[in-house]
Amino acid sequence: MNFGTSRASAIEKLSVFVNQNLFEYSKLRNFDFGPSNRSNISCLSPYITHGIISELELIKIALSKFSFTKNEKFIQEILWRTYWKGWLELRPNVWTDYLDELKKIRNEFKDNANYKNAIEGNTSIECFNEWVNELRNNNYLHNHTRMWFASIWTFTLELPWQLGAEFFIKHLYDGDAAANTLGWRWVAGIQTQGKNYLASEWNIKKFTNNRFSNIKLNENAPTKTSSKIYTASKLEFNNPQNFEEKNLLIFENNLSFEISDFKDQKFKKIFLISNKNENRTIELSEKLMKFKSQLIEDQKKRLEEKLINTEIIDLSEIQNINETSYGLYPTVGENLDYINTNNLKIEFLYRKLDQFSWQYCNKGFFNFKNYIPKIITTFN
Ligand SMILES: Cc1cc2nc3c(=O)[nH]c(=O)nc-3n(C[C@H](O)[C@H](O)[C@H](O)COP(=O)(O)OP(=O)(O)OC[C@H]3O[C@@H](n4cnc5c(N)ncnc54)[C@H](O)[C@@H]3O)c2cc1C
Image 1 (cartoon, rainbow, N blue to C red):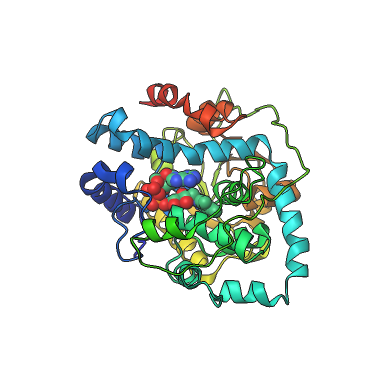
Image 2: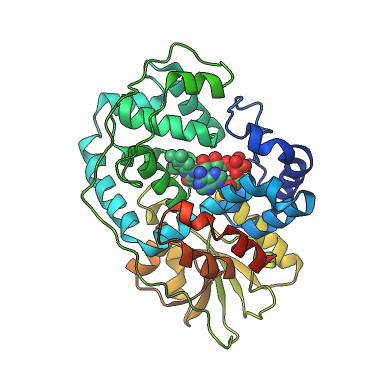
């Protein structure tokens, strides 16, 4: 599997998928045919996570090819991300509590043999071991496989979901605080309270096209529980009425300024912010750090081609800029944590899609789904 590190390579991947494979997406999307045959899904998440391609850009191209009805499943999947992100924005304590729990559990499990065997791909479950290697080597896993993986981790290997979520974030090219934390919580049964996801032998066999057999799993484990209840906070994501000419900070989730809502505004200078491992609670793998830094370099190159004054700096250097800057909102996650902890003064700019869609994220996805046609007509 190959993930290029430029917007050009992302656009190429998008175009191949839309032209050759989108028509069969809803029929085939649940199959994991193995790492050498990924044409049934888009594999665009590493680019969407980093803002190299935007959700709306992708939806627009899909709709130029097929009708809304034909595209419905694909659009729903794209907007799952928007939904998870909004859900977490409304309840940011879910993320901070997760990190606090993780720090404690990490300590308890640092010498645990089951945990070590799991992250080394050394368990008695062949498919699980294969997926561990795939995650480490390819930095990507199919959605269905992420569900099986998280379920086996939590209910058969009986390891804390928090450590599994950390392992994913460490390696996934698309690692994202919202989609990952909430995906793991959903499998464990604490996101939709009392409804866990149990992987089963027949389901894995069928949807891996019989690539695995004799899979011994705990298929009846009780759901995990949590006594914490999170209520949605009030939304306050407002952009300035009048723009002044200031610097703009761009974090790792918005690396295509030229397609952003703010592309026509004038900024003094653009700072692209990289975030090294020392600033993070979850240390990322070397390969993932390299992937991110190449994506940032590519954005710098594209901005310089447009003669925009651009510099790459580390998150910790923001405090050396002697004036308040605008910043494309980094969303709940490690970058925002650093900014808040260090009390950095940034005037955030919010994407129109987020401002509009997040108001529908206070309940479950099935409620959010009702608003998808409204979201699409508002932005297309
Ligand atoms: C335990 C678990 C952890 C996950 N961790 C992450 C993560 O860290 N980062 C991440 O981006 N996704 C995560 N996902 C969601 C999903 O697995 C990936 O977005 C998807 O597999 C990406 O592959 P793709 O681009 O080929 O998807 P496609 O099937 O081609 O879908 C198109 C796009 O829709 C979005 N999408 C699809 N499925 C989901 C979903 N279930 N939730 C949210 N968005 C979705 C993605 O942006 C994706 O690129 C996780 C899911 C689970 C169950």
